[in-house]
Image (tube, rainbow, N blue to C red; front, side, top):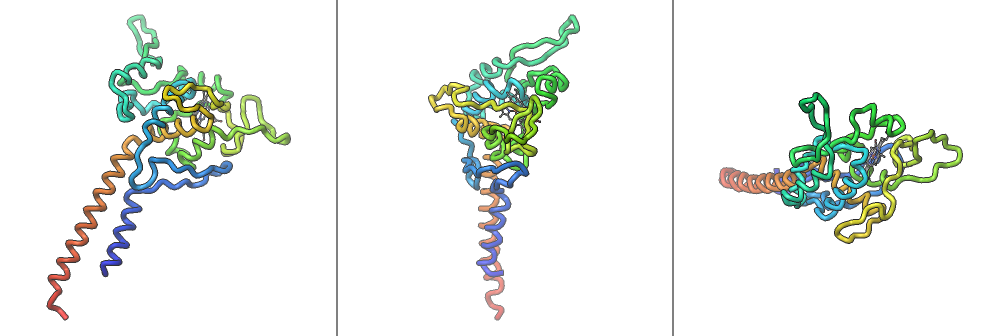
Length: 255
Ligand code: HEC
């Protein structure tokens, strides 16, 4: 193998090992490509966007959705102090018990809890949402074919239904959603949250921010994984160089 070929193989390993996130099209409507800061070989989470996304999640999405695999304490990754994490957790009501009377009760969340569901059980959640249970959002950006781009487009994808469409009671027209009829109402309307950092809360901005937050939730180790990928590839390149030099030395006298 020539040095050139070796380099080609190394650069292929680089692409495979670090895993660029492409945006495969889902079967729904048009999904614009978004340049997320967490994409690419050196991708990192935009922490300001993720923190705003947490605010959107807490004030809007959490009234229907849980994230039962994400513990409040992991929010320190996004730059919150432990005191701030305690304060955030205590905004949530967590189901606990039974107490000594045998009853379940609610108490404010603690750092070791995970983002709770507002519903007692699946049936209650379905009854409140026209028969569709709001899915757990812990890994939603990974679970849907279009990835984060799909989630971001879905949240602002609502439109007036065409006159010949038969949209049942409790469903809404959203061409991004496969099948177009979704039982989640349009939640992101300009100004529905008041961002603490002064950013203007347009629907698009909130959709972007909450998507960055949800992708962090789904892939909290993304940065570590990418750093590791780069270290491994650098190591392999150095090793390749050493082997090549050794090979030249060993075969030097063979014509
Ligand atoms: C009023 C309740 C409610 C609120 C608030 C709400 N959702 Fe939903 N959401 C639902 C329901 C119900 C579904 C299931 C829809 C269906 O199956 O038709 C859903 C589904 C979803 C899905 C999955 C769509 C799919 O492809 O299956 C995503 C993603 C989502 N919601 C994100 C969010 C985000 C982000 C927020 C906050 C900005 C939010 N939701 C706020 C009720 C809600």
